Length: 319
View (cartoon, rainbow, N blue to C red):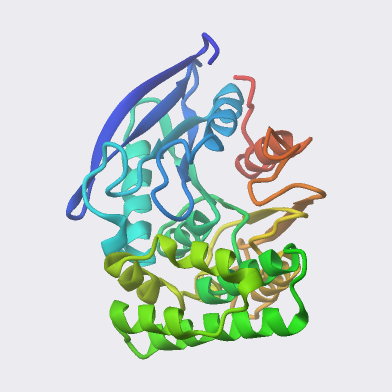
């Protein structure tokens, strides 16, 4: 952390929870534009593991005030993310946006949203409701969680030595039965029976067992609520520019299909004229746009991100 940045712990309310996060403020005389960073799936904290700190640092160096926060029920935030929905997370993102906009020295009208993975769905939902100058999604699927998770499972199956096409088909069919069980409101006990009685090939038993190993009743209920969330209706309602960034070697998200879906939304006749779409794909990078086995962000990623946001705001990032 450089000496020209100030970081402090903050808390702010959102409906029935109190969220805790970190506010990074650049040391500059002019009022600063702002960025709210929203983490990915599961118990993501204000750092989204180790992904957010270098991005937050670069944004602060470029003259932005940055707020990232612990998901409800994670770190110092109250509540339980497993009892929430994407809409609830979007309410939290708007609460973070309002809090950052209200900070002294922050340009409220120049404060936007950055969301990683599931956080991309969240910020698209928030931006569809709220007037923001821009929105950035990173590794955000253009399809439902059910479809994205199926892709991730299929990709993982391809990486296992000895898995035949029939093995993969049987395993994916078991996944499809779980999704359909969720859609008809099946309880956790029924879903567990489906998993235990599915004819999973021995060669993929460990993989499928890993997929189900952390599932409990509350997480199953959360999965059922989330699995058919479609981000495209929110993309259609955007009234601001959208930057979608991806790693070209993302094994969790169907990148080409996601780009096609976001592009189709951008071409829709009802799309707002300000809702432009820019897409950046970083070859050989993973879901977090990292290379070298997750040891570093892809070359040019930070520069692309800060330049795109700065150009949307027409600000002098050296002020």
